[in-house]
Length: 247
Image (cartoon, rainbow, N blue to C red):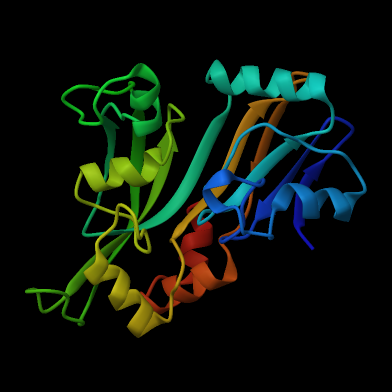
């Protein structure tokens, strides 16, 4: 059963667990755990996807309950009227606030354009992410040539919606998200698997803010971090009360 965060006659927002596809994809044709189908069965409703979360990412996921409402919400995303907030654990100390302004290219777009796949030939599309450092820790576990390992709990706010934007931007500034097997660092991912039994990407969509597409009333939705995420932050020495107070 999915945890329903918000539901009315026009839309529904749930907390998606890590490891589930939003809908069936040619990139993972054998995956049977699909939110669109299972949530539709749970609610007895026909659902219309309006945005996506990576399979490995948990957190707030919205669906429309009609085609017209889906188009209205997608227009809000396109016009940057929906504010999304994510919480992540990243390598190193990332403190204070800042912005990553770094264009991102997609190989499938490059192939459609008939050009090579190098960034030199295809500079990509503009992409911006702001960040806010929340908590830091240093643990007495060696990783590579360093005797201790440093990590940060951060809040990430994507201004644009490029594929894997947060994961790629964190890699770009040398603070990859822990558990990211595509853009992250294997040594740190292995440390978390071996010492904290963490097999997941430590990235969760924790807040959504938008004008209701029907009434224009401001919706401010939030969700807690998953229990398996919190179990890791416990071991890093960040009290749950401290994390909760950051909301």
